[in-house]
Length: 213
Ligand code: DHB
Ligand code: MG
Image (cartoon, rainbow, N blue to C red; front, side):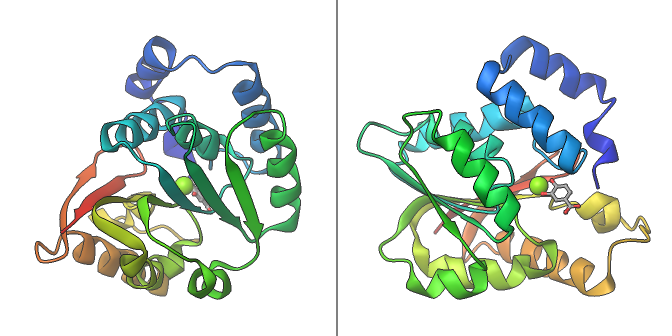
């Protein structure tokens, strides 16, 4: 899934021109690369999330899966002073490191460590923007569970929605048939005009966005 995020000249140009990372983001990205190469969003994709959140005037953001916190920080930087971002992370090592990274900012980020399947029912209120970047096999389940948590006119965003090209018919050995089915169902639901005004942004990994109707 990670290969495409490297050696992509369009992405490299965008990253260099529009999204030079500051020291904190460079450091945490490098740490993430040593732990799991290529799974972090690109700088330009971070910038895109930031702009989407700003356009929306998002005050409350929910993220599923933060890894080192790279996308989290881009999203949280778009918030106003009274905004808040809640991020869920199931991996204890990632949660510990991400917390250390967030502590180096003044951003209003709350990390909840645990399995989203268990945490989602306990979340209160609605969100203006929800970013799903967690276990791919659960994307359809998450979307159904998250729909009531997104306000009307809010933005749902999913990363990796081409699922390594498997949505285009590519065969990839480490991606299971149930994960492919789940991602197909996710994209179909995001494309349902009764539920969303949706589209996929053609990033290397695919990023599906939809405004809740
Ligand atoms: C994987 C997860 C991601 O969120 C991503 O962007 C790329 C790869 C993975 O689990 O393999
Ligand atoms: Mg991802």
